[in-house]
Amino acid sequence: MSVSQEFGRTIQLFLVDGSPNGLMVVSLHGWTGSLLVSRQSRFDRLLQRPEMEKTGVYILYGQDPDNPLKMRAYIGEADSLKDRLPSSARDRGFWETAVAITTSDDALTKGHVQYLEARLIEMAASAARATLENSKYPSPDKRRLPEADKANMEAFLANLKTVLPVVGIDFLKQATAQEVPQKAEPDGSGNSILPQASFEIRHRSGVQARAIEEEGEFIVLKGSQALRNTGYVQLSYKELKDDLILQGILKEIAEDRFEFATSFAFKSPSAAAAVVLDRNTNGRTTWKVEGRKLTYHDWQSLDHASSSKEAAE
Image (tube, rainbow, N blue to C red):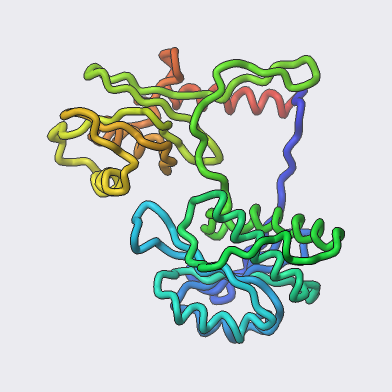
């Protein structure tokens, strides 16, 4: 029998224009919160929505023009989203997506949205996944809300953390791990929790890299090495590798290799392996479970089979 059980949640995406790239209204079953998501090309239509007359918070989100490896975000609040959002958008040219956040029952007050703004800025700064455009970082502690209201707003934020990544806004997720636990630890009930699986590449050149998988990202850990100047011309991830060098994530330590100065989250095992080996490769077979000959692909197949068995029991 499985020790814990995860429950699914239902998120409704309403495509106002009938297009996945158009205006979108997003809601979570059982939650009064509502998100309106718009690209720049649909911004005028966003402003025409009746929800924009309400009190709420908003996010402007796009590629950081100063760092191609990061996104940039601006977080604000307004008594009327329709009155405040246009000027914020006009003053910030980086944004590609605008998100307006309010409720279907007009439950948010000025105090609520000020608290949400402060907490969102605090959470985004802590996660360090996006560059914040905000010049001021208001303290949530100075937003004087009754205890019950604060609890309600924290629940509101928990739902936001579930919904925002679905529409491509993942800047609240905590930054990548720096190390992997090596031993099983007790869970408080006499059972042992298995350590997080870690993967490695050991190249004949002596270059070694370690990685873990966390929340859909493949994270190469600080201290891992990567080959350089191998002469392979068909490296699909050359631009990504150049950006990693430019941003100081890959530091030159020898004529033939770099070292990861900090952990970095890749979108796939193949992207990570390509940067490490300086050539295109199938990361699902190149990465091995640390200390074993089991490939990432084989490990994943075994892990899924084990999960299915536990669910059946």
